[in-house]
Amino acid sequence: MKKNHLLTPGPTQVPTEVLLSMSKPTIHHRTPEFMAIFKEMNENLKYVFQTQNDIFTFASSGTGAMEATVANLLSAGDTAICVQSGKFGERWTEICKAYSVKPVVIDVEWGYAVDPAAIKKAINENKEAKVVFTTLCETSTGVLTDIKAIAEITKNTDVVIVTDAISALGGVELKTDEWGIDVVVCGSQKSLMIPPGLAFCSVSKKAWKLVEASKSPRYYFDMRAAKKALDKDDTAYTPAVTLCLGLNQALKMIKSETLEKAIARQSKLATALRIAVVALGLKVYAKNPSDVVTSISLPETINGGTLVKTMREVYGVGIAGGQDHLKGKIIRIATMGYMNEFDVIIGVSCLEIVLKKMGYEFEAGIGVGAVEKELLK
Ligand SMILES: *Cc1c(COP(=O)(O)O)cnc(C)c1O
Image 1 (cartoon, rainbow, N blue to C red):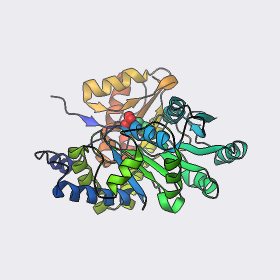
Image 2 (cartoon, rainbow, N blue to C red):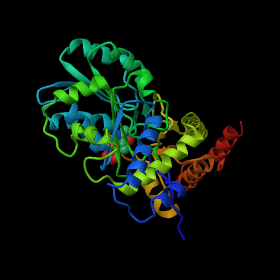
Image 3 (cartoon, rainbow, N blue to C red):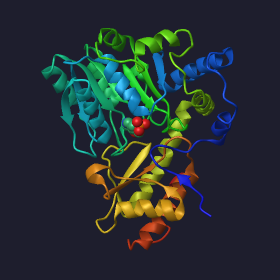
């Protein structure tokens, strides 16, 4: 019998309470029953997003909300600054190109976070740039961006700051209004603890001016239609009813734990995991590691693809490998969302077992022991 443990940086584990909330017969969306839940869901989203801005919910994966952001904020011929420090930062550039928006790319070496000074320089050198696109946790490398410092730079300019917080929202600190983040993009299947299929954008008043000015073609993802409906606690088109029920339940769980404690819990788990990595003689790949996903550099003798496949297929423990040039060279283990200390122990224990079988030498149990010692502190 194989029992599965999902420790991938999306999709993530879904709590039983959330699964149960989605197992009821489908209700119609134009009913007082659904609209009351939708209203509550939006209020709870504002709590987790730490904002009073409107938050639009789309039935898509996270990338849909990224595309919605580009399509609504910019027009063909506009310029935007795109920070590329990994796979997901590159996606901003690609979407901009798809909409004929001129990207000014800030290329950051993978594993490193962007230096806010580089953004300041790009803004000064490209006065026509309307938006700067960033990634809060670059899930492909595990790096956390200092978004607060970047928002300090954009705050007193006309430049709108957008952050892809798809993996990090609910897992790391992000004070949308206090820090002045104009657009926060999120998805459902990471730290928010529900299955894939919902995507979100919070939009500030400053960003809304760009939405009204944009000439880009848009229909389903038109934020103007979404806002008109949202103002009446409604949706422009059929919402993903079942996922909304699950999301509301998940948000209620975050609220009852409190966002602060949820973030502290994930931070504690990530700290223990990083300590285990070092105890095993391995290295954390990210220079400024996030607490939602830990990237681990592998010794040359260990093939990351085989390691990930063996953990999943033989032991049912799902982790992720590296992307692009990091394929086979790193592995990524999530500590996002619905996780506690025993999820980390399962991950580290399975990693140890498979590493041993692959011939990597270390004292068995040293990683698990390190996790326990850290958690007992
Ligand atoms: C997962 C992820 C995405 C992509 O989201 P999809 O739901 O796969 O479209 C984008 N950005 C970041 C930072 C992510 O972690």
